[in-house]
Amino acid sequence: MIKKWWQDSIVYQIYPKSFQDSNGDGIGDIKGIIDRLDYLKDLGINVIWICPIYKSPMVDHGYDISNYYDIDPSFGNMDDMELLLKEAEKRDIKILMDLVINHTSDKHIWFQKALEDLDSKYADYYIIKEGKDGTPPNNWRSIFGGSAWERIGDTNKYYLHLFTKGQPDLNWENEELRNELYKMVNYWLKKGLAGFRIDAIAHIKKDFSYVNLPADAPDGLVGAWEYHRNVKGIEVFLDELNEKTFKIYGSMTVGETDVKEVDRLVDFIGENGCFSTVFDFCHTLYHVNDEEWKDKPVEMLKEIRDKLFEKQLGSVKYGFLSNFIENHDLPRAANRFIPEKEVGFYSESMLATMYFFLRGIPFIYQGQEIGMTDFPKKSIDEFLDLATHQNYKTYLGKGLTEEEALKRINVECREHSRTPLQWSDDENAGFTTGTPWFEINPNYKHINIKEQEDKENSLLTYYKRLIKLRKSKDYKEVLIYGDTIPIFEQYDGVIAYERRNEKQRILIINNCVNKSSTIKFKENIKNVLLNNYKEIILDKESLELRLYQSIVLEINN
Ligand code: NOJ
Image (cartoon, rainbow, N blue to C red):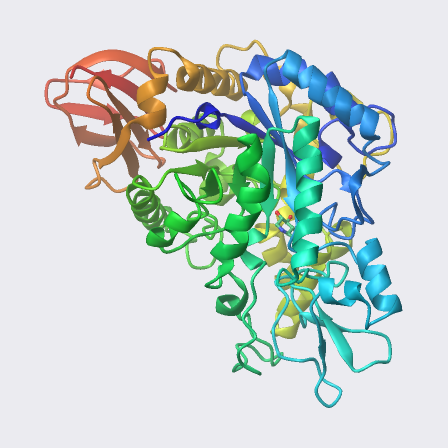
């Protein structure tokens, strides 16, 4: 395998609106990121991914871009961005931006021109089709709910939007459009970006080889995933994108695409794939408070473990996955995987250890390193995201009462992870001197960075240890390139694996439940590299794992 610079990345994801405000307007900004670079350096990460900061009407919090060449004034300006790149470089930190090229904002000049003249070349930059007898061209449902088509004025034409109606989908079949996008990507790479996380990229190819599909719900619409996600032929677009942009710069590219069939990974990652890596989403469906898993955390863990290892083993021959437990589209990991009463240092440090040493690139989402948690709301009006409101409506449409619908939203909604980062117990958690754009979780009084910094037994200190180990010169080779071998699979509630190469063997053992587990163990321990408890209970034949205990051991080879 050819080694690449990005393979030893440890990525920290910044949701800029909620990271750090520097000017008191209540919205996080680029200067705020610059002010906190030393914190990130001290944490030990070496790559930052920043969610979109381009000019945007913010219908989808920046994932609706109206100008790819400009920074949204709420985040600062291009000088700030250039300064951020310089300051990060001084600290050996590389920067990835989000690249949103499945759709633009409806306020983008191309779309505006398309609307002005439906016969112009810009109309073909988007997917615009004739309706049928006053109804949309087909019955696809938008990923955020409702029809995926929006009628254009009083014409019989409709444009496709797989996300909100403020995000018209681009027509990748149009070569001129593709070249415009490549030009823009190269503009940013030339500026010194190390690469991109590439949004919704699985959807750029659509299959319109049919009319309507059988509805999958009372709304008469259908998810139609097979017709707009990883549709065969997408690899031609992806390869062209890679050849004309990323490859020239040796960029790191992280595709937001869930490649379910591992054998298809060959088109996406690895020597000839179009991305450096793609996310492994296999755990994102699970929530300990879903009806299905309530009171069955062990069964849920077993399913997650099987899927996780299937992906790990299947991806090895192609390349590297990106591993994460949190991002800006999910509730917080502690709330998803741990029963409420058991959320705390042990369970959270266990979750961290469990995914961090899997083969691939570890990602940490802001606030995960201090164990930030969900902030349920008392009324639907306290949520801001269109997708949340759309889901709420869908639940009401399915017959749930308002109370039941809110309860579900409080469990599954992505806005939980978007509350401002809790820096300290000062007013507004040290995030802003103004009024925060989104309410801060009141638990900032005791869950905050200042409180955990320099504390021997805090989650933050534990994350620093994880990162240090992953980067250490003695272990990084095996932890990055070694094979992954599932171990102790016969013990329910335990997720354990070995990382191994010809020279070293490292065991990562996690007891993911609130009861002790005793496992048969005869290995000869050379070094204890990490342990979230003080002791290890070991005798000749067995290892007793305490509640939510995680240990990382080097074993004599
Ligand atoms: C995926 C992003 O992560 C999400 O936040 C966004 O709403 C959609 N793509 C649409 O761009």
